[in-house]
Amino acid sequence: MIQTKLTQASLTLQYDKENDRWGYQSGKKAWLIDYLHCGDVFHLKIGEQKLRCRIEMDNDWYVISSNKRFKLHPNEKYEIQISS
Image (cartoon, rainbow, N blue to C red; front, side, top):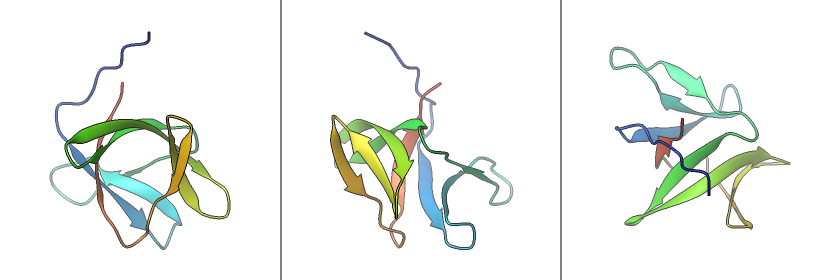
């Protein structure tokens, strides 16, 4: 089993309509965004659970977790932790 080390802080994943990309805040000063790329892995918080997910793009952005695929909604923000 592969062990992943999570960042200490939770990040807010949000959609950048201008760039058609999902990104998260990477700095404390200004809103500096690091964008996710197809195949990037992270943990998505749903309720009290953290699901290991991989982001992908087809006609829309979606994530895959445990062989289940679901769409990310551009008007929503998601709490994530990035694996290192």
